[in-house]
Image (cartoon, rainbow, N blue to C red; front, side, top):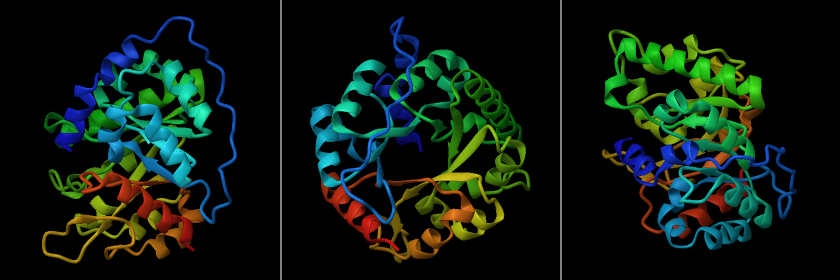
Length: 286
């Protein structure tokens, strides 16, 4: 969690929203068909997995991902590109970016510029990926729910964009007798705030993803697809190489409301190997 927050700060995500060029087009994103037909269409990838490759060659990395078969990407930083530049690259590669990860400070303190940037790029969701330790308390989670509701109301009103929250394992550890994830689900407006269920982190916390998907239909519009091995360390592995039952999750997708599936690995040994393996696994999932 700390690594991801540090990464988002280090690449200037907060400054991205603040320096949005005036007059940037607010036109809606044109739809593009994926390069081939999928059982699960289109397959996506969270670009935090590819952060080293993107830092070296932003356009080339997105082109290679599109060539692998991906139709969607989820951002975690824009690598000094303006919203218009990001949009132009996506259009050229025939990719869409339904979601982005942004620090909660950006959503709380710089919302209008963030919405404008998201609208230009074509995001449908602005997702808070983790929280600082200062907000990991009963009162802190109540504050987070308020931030998400207010941001969701504003973004829906001006741009038809929603906000979301992505979990880690700590979000299932009780605080003052309350499970944080349960508190956030209860205190946020389903019409304004979605959730992105990280299938590895909920499993690592000892909870069943299907339990949450079945108990909260329609609340989880996105999932992060990464697996967990059977070792005592519960290591993160590529999809299909561990113990998570993705077939059962896939079967529950309609009732759960899952619309976007993003392959991810937080610390891949070989990011391109993960990208290829993740795509192949999801492409064959049924």
